[in-house]
Length: 281
Length: 197
Image 1 (cartoon, rainbow over the protein chains, first blue to last red):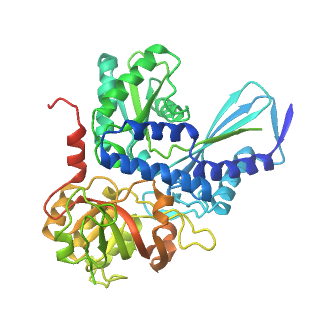
Image 2 (cartoon, rainbow over the protein chains, first blue to last red):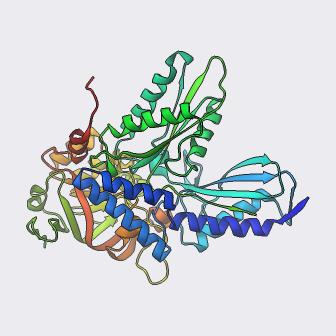
Image 3 (cartoon, rainbow over the protein chains, first blue to last red):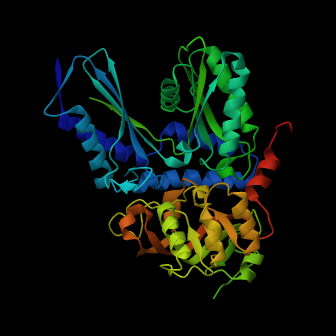
């Protein structure tokens, strides 16, 4: 067994919360610059210029790219030969989120009693944590702050096997059309196909961790991604919803085996502030 | 005190000063890029619920909304020595249930992002008001146009408190004007390649 101290987990999570919120990934920035070059709409180019300039300011001044610094979604890949010493792993992660959001001047957006009093927890906890037990003696931690603007524009539908591939394409395109200007386009469209409804939603969210525009390794899935992307960009919604040819920077599809009677599809939309940072202990 | 300059000024962007008058609102058209200067008020979900509850109870509002612009926003905390943290718009439709009542009370402008309901678009026409969008996610850039920020109501709401901001060169685009124009619809139509029906 390899020992990893809980306090090191806390410090790592705190650092990742701040880094993710202030530093847009180079993959996203490259995709935005490429979209700026290809965009025929002058208004859309102005919007993309502001978005690109905003990322530069945030990185230079180490301030949040977006004021909505999200709920902290944390993906943990825990090596089965790791022993976490000196504390509880879940509490260590929560403490890291608390420190990151307080010390890093990040917004506290979490409220309890969501249907009634909506009381702010004042430290952005609790985080949303997914654990995978994997071989090895390391812990990989990914922090992906998720803002509400795009999360609110996400949809799930239980299609039937008869709906087929075309049914999926149509549902995803309709979902993006319905979202319109709301989710801060240009977006990244995360799509989950198969599994149970919780599984399909989770793989849709995980697809957003992929470098922007990196095709799925399975050519059949990659072709589906490309077809949906073309259809989405034909919607004309454009950057900031002001009209243009860049409604989405990429479509990422992940699949999982489905029940013989099922074909659930989840559409998890990610705004252009596509944030995630990872570290391995 | 409102002023209005020609579209030729400042790289073609119109300059709009607050408070807004009918004359200024009448000159704004969907798609216009503007730069806003003066005092604006910040209110979002929880504050809207309280503002409209006060209106319905016949109680005074914490600020006089007549002629004012409300910015749908909840900033990140200010770093030391700065007036405000990152300060981009939040999605406007969540305020739709409350907006017609505020427009009826004299509110003239709103800044947010995203599409509004039919009821809000109608109220904008009826009350000669205007809905602007700022670029969602451009929060560090937009914060540069904020010179001062003070809490004026509901401090217990934290990031949802009502703020008064002093802004200069605040970049925005007219989305819904008092003539029924809609920049989102027009922009989408111009670049859409989808067969009708």
